[in-house]
Length: 244
Ligand SMILES: Nc1ncnc2c1ncn2[C@@H]1O[C@H](COP(=O)(O)OP(=O)(O)OP(=O)(O)O)[C@@H](O)[C@H]1O
Image 1 (cartoon, rainbow, N blue to C red):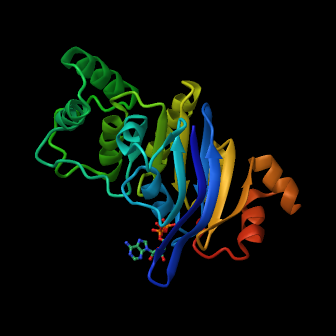
Image 2 (cartoon, rainbow, N blue to C red):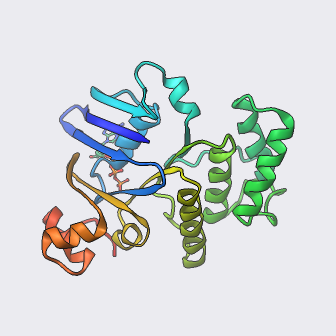
Image 3 (cartoon, rainbow, N blue to C red):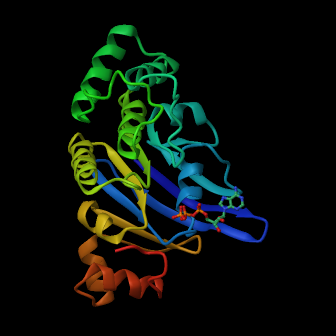
């Protein structure tokens, strides 16, 4: 479980994150939805301990990120906005390298690596150097790498960005599988259809603030809109930056 309490991050005059609180529960998919520049990536960066908040608290499975960042990192699998693969290594080697950094044992690394390669249907690319990989191939490799240590909590920053329809469908399927395994899945998106299709809970963020935190059904009811797209536009007050 991931808990965010009253988080702030300002860059000069820009209030990127301005008092954000929410909870992402185990066995659920939580979507952080907001237009471009809403503060999604900054919020996630503080969650996965890449950036310190100006104020506020991040708890992962009850562990305070400010007190024990390393313990928090062990509990997290992260697909960052910069996918950051080693281009001279093959996909398999990228996954293995990360597992070694996590201090995993050789036999466990092999088992978990092969399990993920199969689950993400990446057998055909596993022994290719990642240099020249397509967006979809890069995302798959980065996700396999992020999950190799079997983390309970999974954070994905705009996971379907740049993916085609088939790749998006299979990634959604994979995220449902993670949820079915009881993991806490938190992802950001500016695509409302995606969030509507996947999420148990939607946290809508605009101008660094949470403007709604509901189930998709409750959002529809609260705004009196049958269509989620209309509901989002009503909550945010504009459809700017929200792709359908
Ligand atoms: N390192 C930084 N220095 C200065 N300003 C920053 C920095 N990081 C983010 N910002 C600003 O903070 C605001 C929120 O940015 P953020 O990347 O968190 O938004 P986002 O919701 O992830 O947007 P997008 O959907 O476009 O990725 C933006 O105005 C951005 O320009």
